[in-house]
Length: 117
Image (cartoon, rainbow, N blue to C red; front, side, top):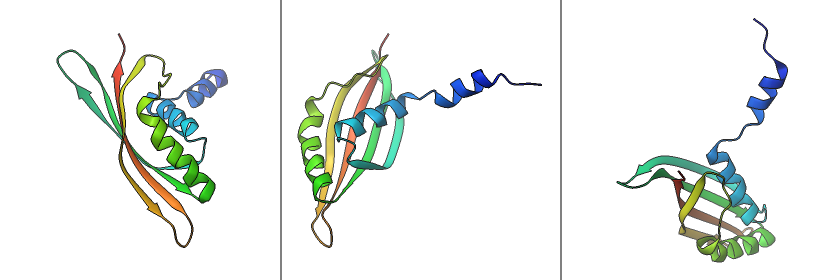
């Protein structure tokens, strides 16, 4: 059996909704963060279905910490552009600053995504 290399390349570059969300969050951090953890759980109510995402982002260094603080301020009101998905809620659950030996910031966020359609 021979596989079409074009089809294989397409499958390798296809990104999941969780991957698109991670990319969108990192863009909002000005690419100053590292995703330390990311969990996803299905979520549904009588009228909606989607997923709840919890991420921990790590910001290392003074410039990254400043970008992290701007991220914390911007996240709740940010309008994400994720095709087929609506970000119904985005919140900061916890933020931990460290000053020594090097400035660092750890931010835990939670996002509720609803499937459109």
